[in-house]
Length: 241
Ligand SMILES: [Zn+2]
Image 1 (spheres, helix red, strand yellow):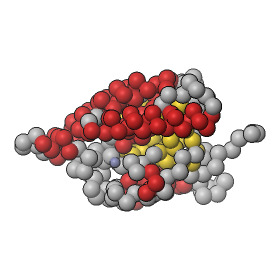
Image 2 (cartoon, helix red, strand yellow):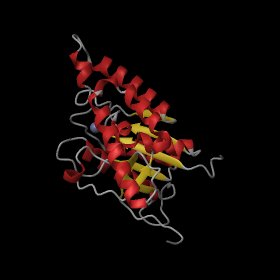
Image 3 (cartoon, helix red, strand yellow):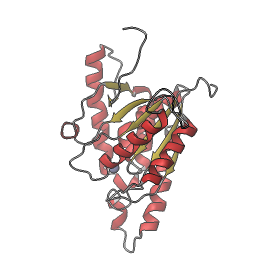
Image 4 (cartoon, protein in one colour):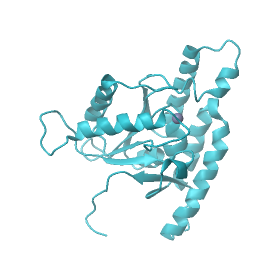
């Protein structure tokens, strides 16, 4: 598929494993259909989401980051995506204007059709809402506040958030289910690559089954076994219903 017609998906997470639990199936389905996908992580989640690695005596931040980079790269490769980490630090994730600029550059270069990140609210996580704000800002700057802008822009992208750990408490109401049945094994492989958070594998496998049940119900398609849920932040435009 040529650059002109290929669909481009950009997934941005606060920590290097966030994309795996919440959107590895979407990414795999997207790349299997011939689309391109990039994953950008704002940090490695080296302090707050690498529990298993810190059980190792003498563990260091630099070593945890190295391992997390390898794991995320492997997980992204399992679903056909590139992985980049901006390494901004976690717990707390702090972003400045230059980090928005870096995301703008990435968006201008990749010109994604779809951007996916965290919801804007998470009472359990200090970093996820920060990621939402910075992605939201970069996307708006990239799209241009008006049709014609005095700065470089890329076409407006669809904007969705992926499912947080406790959806109700994060104001997450699904508006899109992606059928990941055909690529579920790829998601499992990606989850296995994240050795620092093995406890989440079972949880997110079950979530995929539950969402599969909901997707069957809403579509009447009995072949859907696993699904991932997303919420649209801006309406999408279709030619008819
Ligand atoms: Zn996270």
